[in-house]
Image (cartoon, rainbow, N blue to C red; front, side):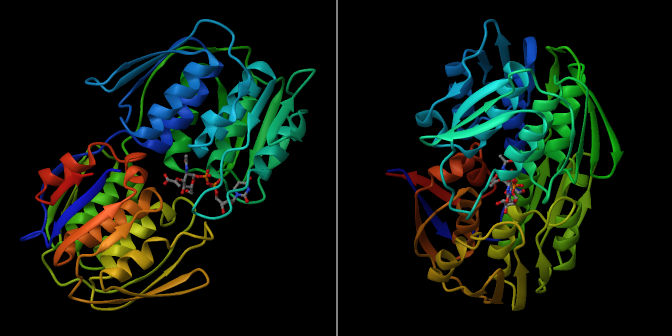
Length: 421
Ligand code: EPU
């Protein structure tokens, strides 16, 4: 199985620039929502990552016609016939975002039978709020042999639903289920992550009637149909932060391009606070980490707070910042999976409940490590590029789910990385 071999430390720090891909977590719901549209939808800036490939397979299995233009990073999705409304286990078990097909199939065909998506190393990832929301739209729910059955015999009807807790895919699912429903739906306490806003923009482009009544309250007036349209996916803010942190941990200089800096407001403030120099452009961010860095205390949260996906990435940087840093994780119960791997390299990270205390050191030493999820993979890569001697990282397929051209990009900024078997 493929592994990464990284020889650190990266001399003089990383140097160069990276073009960010389209955001994976925007692309997946946008692709799932294509089921709701008539004719052809075109998505530009599609990220060529494995999760997108899996979503292509899922959509094709349900009946969508897909054309992928890799060089141009464009995907065309055409609905020529009725989709199947059964999402089988073998297709959904590898990717949690398959859960997003429930909202689009239900929204279009008033029914969907879907295998429950597999467990996840980040901890409990319930979908009870998705189901509660669907039920509010006059949909019946039952569970049979691991399959969720959803059906609105008389069609979905608009209603009011307040999410007990902010959920990203829960919001996307309810949006997709309500755009073609009869009447008006009001969703409260929704996620306003940039990726959800991108989905709203796409649905509105196709003719959906969606308006904000408050910061986290949205009104959806059901329409008869959505017309195929063209949409450019936003840049990946998590990928952007990941590469900025490659600059920070190696005390290098890096520019990330094709991303909206405002999507990273909180994260950029954190990078400034630890001592990085930043120059913000319209769609680019330049980081210079030549000064001594300082420890920090941060807490993750829903947008616009510090993103949980960026937490393991920052944690890696903090292992090399002298002093005591603290991270409190508020979204997932098991998001410190990078910590034992970084400890193999000599980092000191004390975990207690949802808090990590990091005592920074000058010296990390390369080690053999195992990646256990997508962001953990990048976190370990960061540790390895800042450590003395070589590191071997296995199960890197996790990283390929969400980072495109990972090896090429890292090599282009001076990291001594290669893929081995
Ligand atoms: N939750 C419930 N019930 C629900 C839904 C969520 O209790 O019905 C809880 C979850 O257990 C969790 C919290 O609410 O504790 C937040 O979960 P959320 O539903 O927001 O997460 P998600 O939609 O499953 C998306 C991203 C994740 C990202 C989180 C948080 C996609 C495809 N995934 O997951 O991205 O970490 O939001 O921002 O958009 C990644 O890209 O590596 C990744 C894991």
